Length: 476
Ligand code: FAD
Ligand code: NAI
Image (cartoon, rainbow, N blue to C red; front, side, top):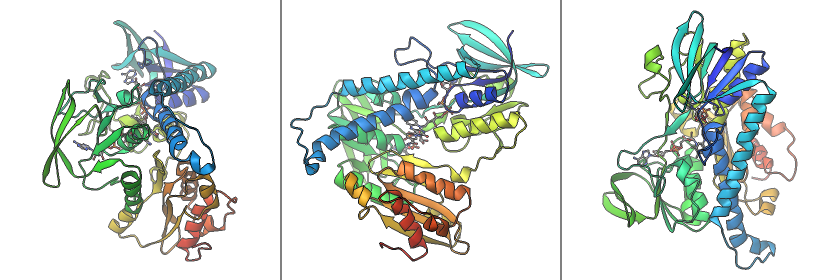
């Protein structure tokens, strides 16, 4: 029987990074993963993120942005392109190529770092002295490996909607939404969260009529509401996404006429028939087949594996990271927890600050933030000051043809320490890193204001917002 220092279950961005870091620290490490490629005929490492999440969605967002720009934006640059055509199947083929390249890259990284990659479904069997036994099942064939430490990184799966079953033909989860080879004429989306907005944007840009039905009365409730309101206006008024808030779904039928959704909104009953319907109402932790009950691995009332602040479970030397534990379901959060756990096993004292995890929504304009929103600061009774600045007069943004959006810096009224940075605008997914760095190093808004920012760059808008927090904006 093979014995390891560390066995990781799951090779998503949490698990594969944890395995690589553990191997780098000198541990004999194996990573078990059951993921298969789109064709279903070969193992595919990388989990949700690489196969059916972050990476493929960003590929489609880029393709659809190019198509939209060629149709609507090139003209003002003096470029005439004539009749622009769109081939959805080719867009999906390009996306599949990127996925194959990156999932293959993990296989290479495992080999390079001497991580043993085991294909199959992992489940916890029990203890053999100091060691944990983990069963690996591949098409009915079972083997058992032993390890001193086990890191559970089994991720998440889409939250099901009781009203309708996902068939990934007409009613789609993220997997189906990323694989449409024809543009649906009418696309419905349930949930105006991150997937709803990103996927809704992709298919809207390439020609679908998109209606998003959201249960909450507030748009992007977790985001700073000044930014969320600006986003709502751009997405609905300028881009033509129909977003209905405060929706109560009554019935969904999937038949030869399409997918018919009956719902209530603002006291009125409505019915819409769509060619395709994306269901994106959140994700739930995935512990299926792990044998959590059998070994007594505790879960909370929502099904997440219970961990302390350092990702320790209730069982000795069993750790859990990523989407399967509390906290935001984000790839970078999963990876950073993976690194931290490997280092803790090695006796190091890594620190992961949950207050400085950045959030990004890759719409156009993008939305990004780190730290507290104004609403949170008010609710917590924290006295704060704020500075805002827009992209409208930023030279780089104007050159790019993307001069929409705002950056807001929130700082403590007494100490000037940065408490939150909120953005909507071009490439703010990149700009938010400066906010993260500032908060991580306990910077003040004055610190950001005194740092030299290159000209002309988008980062000057953050600089200006920091100056504004101190009431000394130069371009305000
Ligand atoms: P996962 O990536 O879910 O990986 C878990 C792995 O474990 C899978 O490979 C699975 O096959 C395997 N597994 C499960 N059970 C077993 C078992 N018993 N035995 C063996 N293997 C098992 N996050 C971002 O930060 N940025 C984004 O832009 C972004 N975009 C997204 C877009 C979409 C459409 C979706 C759905 C998600 C997106 N996310 C994004 C979220 C991100 O994908 C997840 O937060 C991240 O993948 C979580 O990583 P993980 O390692 O915890 O789990
Ligand atoms: P989400 O939590 O972002 O949004 C789900 C939305 O569905 C919420 O607004 C919720 O109020 C709504 N909803 C729930 N039940 C509903 C119902 N019955 N009817 C109508 N609306 C309903 O979840 P989403 O979009 O499914 O994404 C899952 C997770 O994947 C995200 O939470 C995020 O962590 C991750 N992700 C991250 C991305 C990024 O970082 N850019 C991109 C895509 C996903």
